[in-house]
Image 1 (cartoon, rainbow, N blue to C red):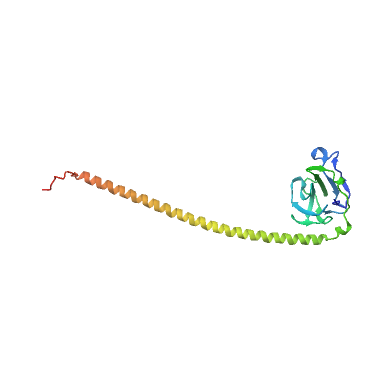
Image 2: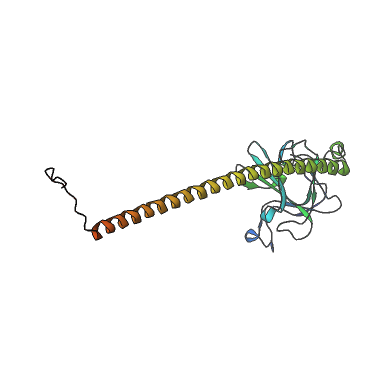
Amino acid sequence: MIRPSTSPITTPFGYVRGYPLHNGVHYGLDFAYEPDDRVYAPFSGKVTCKPLNGDDGNAIYMWRGDYFIGLCHLQQFLVASEDEVVAGQVIGIMGDTGAAEGRHLHFAVMYRSEFIDPETVITKEVPMADTSTKSTQEQLDLMTFKFNESEKALRAREEQATQQQAVIDLTNYKLSQSEAALRSREEQAAEYEKQIADLEKQVADLQAGAGFVEVTDPLYKKK
């Protein structure tokens, strides 16, 4: 595993007197912001970038076999999630995001879900040839391009969502109109039934008032 910074270590792994977190236990190595604020990939593989991820702040995570590493408190990402990087590639700039006091790099290593001292697995310094494979400006240009592409994709999705919402709104409007028409017909039918009931009552009242008697005897003959 390659050392992720050419700057000196300021805080070692393990119990540190006065360290304010985790009961004084520092689960990683801290590297100074100067003289080199660049962060280098400890090994080749795919990266996951997490902006403002709690105490870690802007962090880059990588996995390789049983190993998991975190590069925390970055000021800037120079790669994007799912990017494949090579060992020694510049992937970020140190910062003070998250639970950090001053700009620095916090480098954490886990082996089979347990924190270990990163110095026990660092076997190489940053290769000078790898540090110059891409300038910081080239990295920034690449990130700007990816950001612009992401914005275009986001706008396209927003336009698609707007069109879908317009269709939903039109469907809801037609449904509400249909429901209103149905309620109107039901109210009209109820009014017709009321009118029929009123007419039947009026007929019954007229028959009773005129003394009409219903004749059911078949032998009855009109004289």
